[in-house]
Length: 176
Image (cartoon, rainbow, N blue to C red):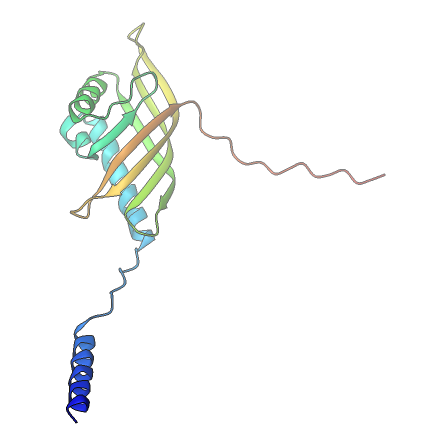
């Protein structure tokens, strides 16, 4: 009888303990369209911040551990190096920049994303000091921060024209 009582008490304790544990909760699904809209809006503001030559606002788009790779310049990853690079860039009196994403991809986890796009930039020619226009493409990797904001963690710029449009293959000639 004692044994049966002990087993009953143990079983009751196990049932009570099992009732106290909760099933792991599934993370809410990421609203991909909302994230894409948010990142595109950030890039629109980023354009305005560059064109207003606001170094602090431009710096605010980058995470603390971000890296910037611009054509012909060394990779800058330290915060003070990023600030110096951006300060020099926006001090160009001929600076006018426009960039826009052609593609936004968001990881299923909702923690990382990237934008790939094109840019046109007017700046001073380093030799003649006269205005010159450049264009090219960029790839920016975004990371969701602990406060819910999105910051660039990798920002790579490549000179050159936009990617050519996909063309249809030529129709095959009928066999004779």
